[in-house]
Amino acid sequence: MANTILNAASVFGEPPQETRLALYFGRTWKNLMPGEKEKRRSVSSGTRSIRYIRAANATDKLPVVNIAPLLDNDVVARRSVAKHMGKAAMDTGFLYIENHGVSEALVRQVYDYAETFFTLSFEEKLRYYIGDSPNHRGFVPVTEKGTYLDETGPRTYEAFDMSLDMTYEDYQQCGANPLAGPNVWPEISGFKECLTRYYDSMRRVGDALCRGFEIALELPDGFFSQHMRYPTSQLRLIHYIEQPKQKTKVDMGAHTDYECFTVLHTHQKGLQIINKKGKWIDAPPVEGAFAVNIGDLLEAWTNGKLVSTPHRVITDGNERYSIPFFMATDYDTEVSPIESLLGKEKAVEYTPFIAGEHLMAQLMRDFPYLKKRYLDGEITLQAGAPGPNPFERKITASESDEAESELD
Image (cartoon, rainbow, N blue to C red):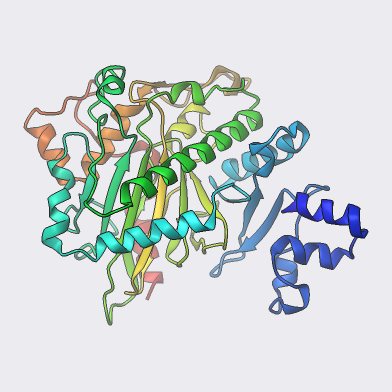
């Protein structure tokens, strides 16, 4: 959008500052609500690479980064974008991205197909139950509930999970990867084609973000992407089922994500993150943007320089949809702190681990059927029995209980 403004200025002359800002944000300046002018001003030098919004329940400013330069060859602009991405990832591990190259039409199609699937009868959806898949793909019913301290009462959301749709030849290249294999596709015309297009689009966005983080951390080009030949990256459709007369409560318990980072699309409120002060704040949807939160792998790789974001979802009983994409590495990738990021003391804060094993261990907490497979000896982990996620140390029982009481 910034490029559009500059091109228009070259033909028609430079518009006033307020007009340029209004064009960039897609609304006329005079029609902004009181207070929005200050909230929506760009803060950058020339390229308008960042702006901020405020959390509804706090004074925190949440960054919205224009990543268009990461998708083209503007090296100078890339550095500016990467700097803003890096700062956000170091502060709270959370940011929004816009001008990402994914069409709104495709996003709307995904929501339409999600609604079509979740309106099927429960019996029909169970034909695609994730527990019947050998490689963790398919329908996740509300009964497939994990263990979260702050998630009380019955779960009220269901999901559909897919990943890299592998041929037998691809599978042969993956080694001992229990998450590799084909997707499970419902018999809905166009569903597979639409979700495959969206998955591929998300991988391109993920590649661009990897490029930005590599620049921000002064790492070689391709440092992260070299570990993503056959990644365990997952796309999930989530449906929060309407619950009339329900009080506001935690519906998806507090957790971090187990991969490199997550790219989330949602157009409804409910997402909350922990800020630098350890308090829960709202992360509202931003039109045309994706929310991005750092995951466990990037925190470990960077020796804690980037922060894996604790987050949760609260619900007031209204129906809600969201579409997270979890950008991951190959299953067998060893993750250990990068030497150039250790600092002067060279203190290593994280023990090396296998990315896929960490993912599988945490999925066992989230999915009872996987835990049963482990206990039955169908799944083995080199690191031994799975325990609590060490990256969730920011989330304590007392914080969760206090946060729960603040919802009332």
